[in-house]
Image (cartoon, rainbow, N blue to C red; front, side, top):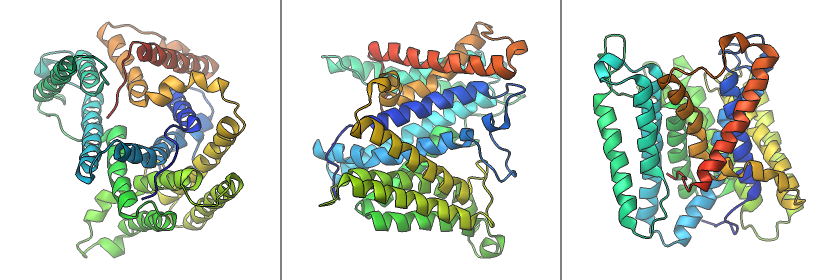
Length: 397
């Protein structure tokens, strides 16, 4: 497996930070009345997508771009093959656990059956998660182990006492894996492909096509019904998401792979060719599988990955080639500490609910006032992330 030479690419961090900023903005904007359709998620059967629908696949794409660097860094530090696999599984497990807890919190905690308000349960969960996955810098490592152990104990207790549903009969369970859990599964499968195929771009392209074909077969009833292939339907979404992560890996290999005698101009041409292939493939598949984020269709995946290729290519040219990078400092806290920044809005929501505090009345959640508020809120979250970074709170799975 060819290792990338560089260990930190500023444009990748900037792309990640921008994606998180947009994510916070669109999540806060959700439910706002009288806003343009292009600021909303498209409905499942509309055969369309807005910039809002590209946020989640952008997360997946950036995960893919980071995989070659992350695994190479672990290997460079001396991890054996088994240690590397344990790291991948541990990271996957962490994302799945976080996803399940977040989904159950959103589904609704039955306060009477659980014994504490749902907002307090959620807040304690986030505190426990921070304790478990924070990067500790104590000279005495014992304190890190103690705090991490307290966080694990907190998660176990919260998982045991959780009760959901109107009658309080529902226990903690994966209703669905949540955004983080979906990222976790796609990360796991993409890491397996990346290692088995040793980072070869052509083979990774074939793996992307395989994931796309898997989804298409799984959603063709005459092919799966009665052929013991019904299990494919349950995994079709994971295959689609994995294809986007693989696209991120491919672009990362194009720009930062150690291929001999490949100048930067040729790398950009290869990246443009790759983006064109994605758009063309999406165009030809669209008559059979419409664009739909809700159904995670191949067209949505391919178009989203193509858009990410173009956006990253521009950012890389601007930031790393032309060195116009001063403006990226605003995004750096989120780009280098994405998990913490991702959960800040949920922590704030739990706090507001716990203290019955309404930061913006519903009467102002419409049109231009609602859009302006979502922008202000997103910027505020970025500054909160910067403050938490300064306090050395940094989450790492």
